[in-house]
Amino acid sequence: MNKRAPLTDQSGEVRELTKEDLRHFKPAAEVLPPDLLRTMGIKARGPQKAPTKQATTIRLSPEVMEAFKATGAGWQTRIDAALKDWLRTHSPV
Image (cartoon, rainbow, N blue to C red; front, side, top):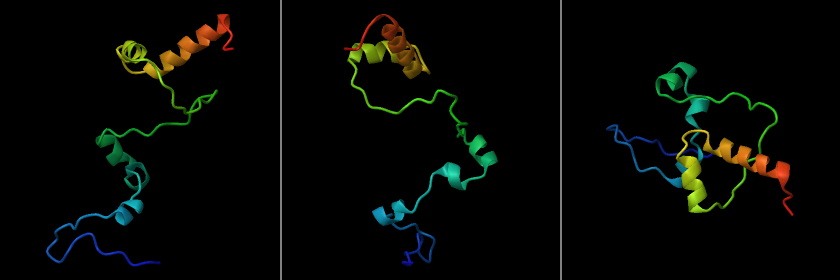
């Protein structure tokens, strides 16, 4: 195992972090106790309810994005519902 340089010097000053340092960082949810995460407002997600969704990237017009985002949290779920509704009466071909 390679020995990494300490993050602080003798006087306690933190040195500039390198890309190698950052590769060793872990997400807060993996290293902090659950009570501390809650006080920081970091919520752990539970398992996704079936059916699970797939992550994807999609390009939408600015008008569509603005309209759905203006409805607040859950806008991606509402886009999914709108597409499902469209599929009930249309063919994607």
